Length: 94
Image 1 (spheres, one colour):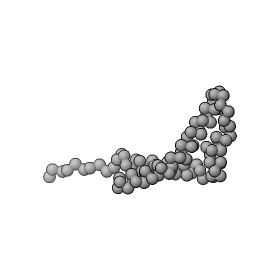
Image 2: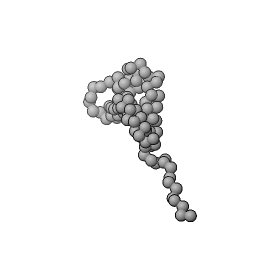
Image 3: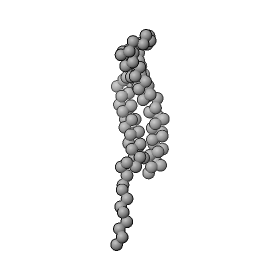
């Protein structure tokens, strides 16, 4: 079972990597531009369009797809961790 989850986790990770990286990097950049006067002339509006998926005309489903991808990675990752595995019963010495 762990082997199957590793396969799904690897595939899902590859698919979700670019959208999540775009969301994280643009979110951090927008925050830095608004909070710190760095003197960089990048439009926060343009970065926000990338951040929300509006530039790709996906603003209605982009956050949902990001969220579902992260939940999928969370479920497969936790299942592989053995954190919720069945505890082995100690052998009874009858």
